[in-house]
Length: 299
Image 1 (cartoon, helix red, strand yellow):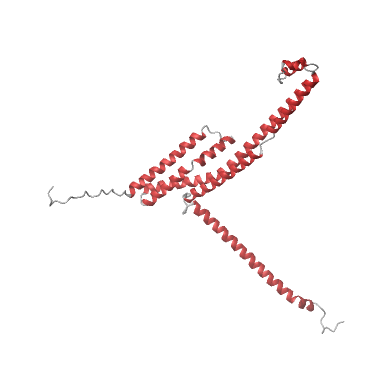
Image 2: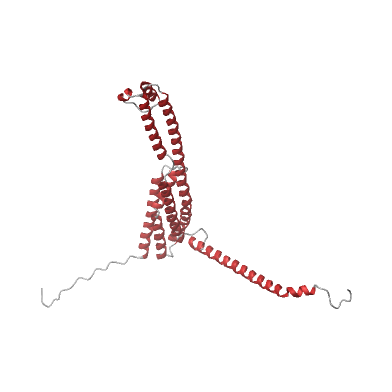
């Protein structure tokens, strides 16, 4: 290369900056993908639908809350796309529809709290009822086997009666033992089995009850905060502000009305106190005016 020619550097490659429409289209597509993933995942979890079964109700609540991040991300992406292209009418209509669905989702999340609590309580009550029925059957069987053991007059008769009533099988060595000793050993084993059955079937254990209460609290807290998150981006049909804004405004009005009532009560109380003080001051003069007139000539 000639010395007079200086080496030239290649110009740096400059990536074109994505345009707002392309970014908005990407955000919208990603949001719709989040919605589709959420719907298909929840449907695959809750089918077949059994809305009256407490176990299905808890499954439905768990599936909705475990995957609720997908529609929440989709809601945020739709709002970002609308922020980038506020003049696009198709995106405006899509955003409005998503906001209406978000309002319904916020209400659904609130309703999940009592639904999950009722389902958990029904499951615990069902377990207690089933265990009570099993305990009654165990008590009846205990009484039957006890009568069989006490009514036998020989080891052979005892073995035969136990076999007829699905009782424990005696070993061949037990048939040569004295009947009182054999009967006492069988009664001890029967009493131990009865105690173990009572221990296992006395209803839900305290740990199970505490676990159920902890699940109710956990689901309630998660559902409440998710409802607030959806309400921040939701809008009722015909409303001028978000659902969270409406709730905040309603709460502010209630607080102002309460403060006004308190101020009115305080004003009335102050006025009453002033009248009380006034009547206490003029009370003795009123008593003098009701007495006899000193200029009256009548006795």
